[in-house]
Structures are given as C-alpha cells and as structure tokens.
Image 1: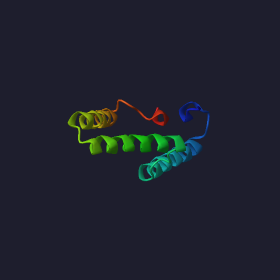
Image 2 (image 1 turned 90 degrees about the horizontal axis):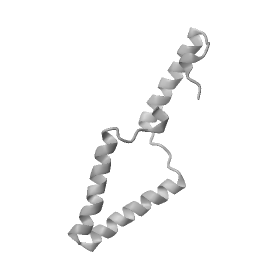
Image 3 (image 1 turned 180 degrees about the horizontal axis):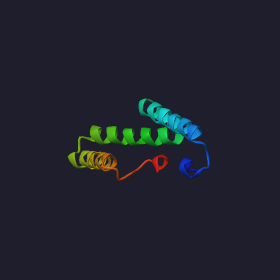
Image 4 (image 1 turned 60 degrees about the vertical axis):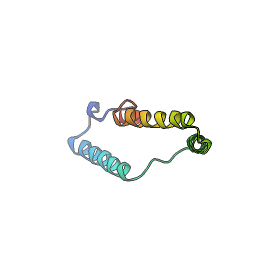
Length: 87
C-alpha cells in the first residue's frame, strides 16, 4: 500500500487526499461494517450456542460462554485486537 507522506505530490493534492481520508473515517464511524456471509453464519452459530447454554439451565454451562464474551469484549476494548485496516 502506498503511503501518502512518501509520495511526491503537491501540497494541494495531499490536502485533498487527507480530506478524503477524514471523510471516509467519519463515514465509517456512523456506518457499521458489512459482514460477509461466513461472518454472519459464525455469528449466528455463536448466538445459537449461547441460547442453548441458557436454555440448559446448567450454571457451569452458562458461565463458560458468559466468561468468554466478557473477556473478549474487555480485550477488544483494551486494544488487544486491532483492526488490520487501521495499521
């Protein structure tokens, strides 16, 4: 991928490119990303497993997915998993 800071371009065109980048970032903040079909299937399977665990009424079986979700969200919010597009 080409870095705009290393390109030999005029300051005016660089300013335009930065504005376009900011517009894309602002747009991305408000629009959720479009999930692929595979991603949707995996998400549906995870939700189904969580519902099955809750329906079982077994406290140990309920605690495992709850712990995993809590830990994953904490790590994600802490920056452990970074979006590869933001690098």
